[in-house]
Image (cartoon, rainbow, N blue to C red):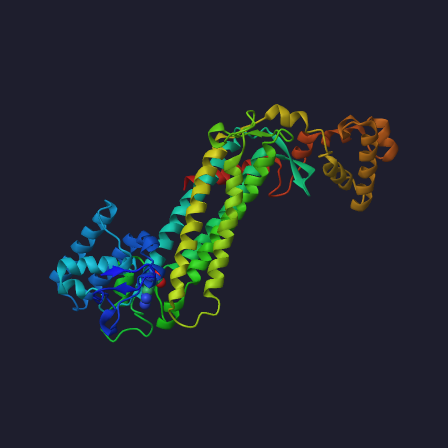
Length: 473
Ligand code: ARG
């Protein structure tokens, strides 16, 4: 059979040997085969497809739909195919549409009628849902491991960086002084929420679709409890129409990945600024930077920029999935085939970003002197001074005004609050004594903190210990 450029088959037409070909009297147009194929991307699901098929066949043997011998042949045939795919010896062809048909076809080629029994009480609709759920479950576990590695990279810096004070910002203006580990643990908290979200999503992913068949279930006697057990699914989908159409789990996972990418992009943005000569807070490891082809002096934070930039595609992928599923009629529609590429892409992107993030965090060097030299700028201790007045019984709003006038006086003299002469202080607030200087300066302002979750050294120390225990478990 040959094909003309417009894709119409010419010459001797032979009907293709398709799994669904029985009712057809015309061969499929080549362009349709190319347009509808998914094997170019769903071959990634081969291991899940084979695990799903082995579990399904094992269940069929349990209920007597296959003999023990038939099951044995199917299992070893499927595992043989798996090895061939892993060694790159398996040939994928567009005409065979998707990963399911490739594997089943090869099995039947080798086992004949035994292979033809594998698809008993199953449809590709519940099969693809099963494959994708198994894949997402594994992907969740991998992302979770990567998240923990990033948390560990932050926690592992905390002791060494404990004596470093950094300005914290609001509105990108210097606000209050904080311990460096307080920053590191801030990201640990964000990523911990990401872990919780993934864990919650995993519960809904971990539901067995097999047995729903195409849409209505099956008239063949099967045991879904067994299939679920073999695949480690915690529950069985209770409505065959629902599970055939359900991609909520894919959207949820895509959203979890968006949230992670958003957190990483905030961190990337922050460290990009921190690595500029204007901030000069940190040096990034050179192995994680690249140069400019025209400006010889440049060491650019490209990895951080791309972690920030690739967040866009992760967001776009979620958008694609949302639009894809909007208003789809029940139950399975071929549109759903379009769910895989965005999902795979989001996973690959976030997985790579997390891997690089862990190394970047471990290799970052704090420019301690440069940070310390400028800690006097920005009146970081002003809020602590105000609270000192509040602690002495001055109403908060009054104290705010008093300290505002002191900051103004310090600005006029171009000195930090700690260098403001005592007579000037007393002139503004006569009730003050020289002990006021005990809360002035960034280090004293940090030390004066008390509340749970604050940057007080005891509080941060307690949190570091909690995190150290956590990342070990
Ligand atoms: N390739 C399809 C998908 O990804 C598999 C299911 C196809 N089912 C069908 N009845 N054509 O969604």
